[in-house]
Length: 447
Image 1 (spheres, rainbow, N blue to C red):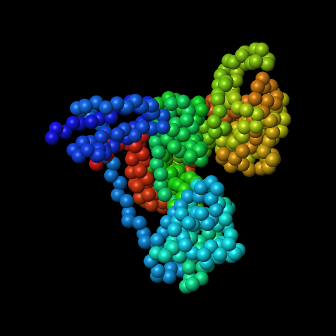
Image 2: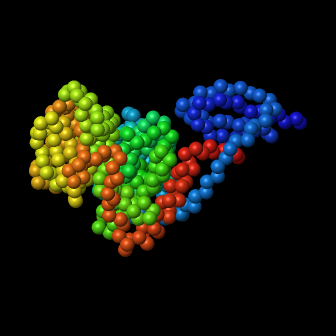
Image 3: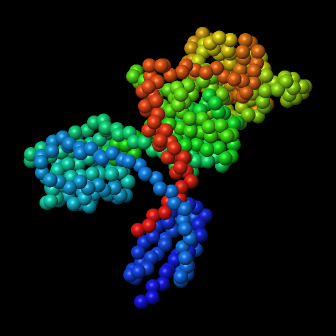
């Protein structure tokens, strides 16, 4: 019998994963292209068409065997764990019926026991997990309440006991990578990164990169971060474990170090601090509208004057943060600066934040502030033609360009921690390298 090859032709605008599946007729194969959400496809059959070789990338990751959990209150009865998602319009009875629970006494317990009432907080798509025996009798139940607590029900002999409390959190590593096309947030969204992790990227590299002024199309990033899970369900992102950012051809890498006292800091592979003594920008994301210059036409005075600072355009009310640890030398109104804050830092360093709409409530002269702390909000006070922040960086009283001045470094990792840090960097760096490879990988799977 002659066997004819059959191929499905597809054209996609998005990413694709190629998978070979066996056709109903013996001896034939179908090549099926699974298209991304942004893809548009046209299908047709082409007899005796030769399938082009698809580039492949093999990635091997050794995973540890999962531990065998010991369930409190285990009666020794062999049970079956099942999970079901809450559907719109569900009742607790309908969900348990889909899970194979046939136990009127258990339903009565759920209805009358005060500790078990939280199971009635049904929300669509939330999971409900139960354990039953072969006859459908309820042996155990696990359910995350609307307040984030874990409801556990276990059978002890012929009785059911309900407990509710803080859910145990499991941390897992996730990784992602992307390339800047328009903005950091746009690339991060395309890579599936939570916003909380994107903001951490900007914070980790804030001493080296102004994420509005410095980044450009073609810059790349890779990140390994923690994801928090409760009972197998993701409940939010944790801290970045390792991150890499390629900016204008320069590659920066940062790794998390947790001290015994619980404090966290980021360091380069050699233990150099990622956190500089000063942030490069007083706002997380803003646009430079007027740079440092010795001759700029002043829009109000209508004359050419030196502009010894940098203006950042932003909406009124945008938070302004202290770029370094220091003491509040002045807070109030000062001529053309309008509402202004002046901070005195260690040594001869001073920073100025002008045209603010208001100050942070806690701010007062002589008080201490820490790097990244919000000290005020963007406004249009003083000599300002529009809402913006005027920022100055002074050394010994002389203004320097905040965008180009060499910033003093922070404290390096203590020598006593270097060996432990180097040991922790190895697996994090390996995952970071894997994230880079995944950023442009096309996977082909053949059965």
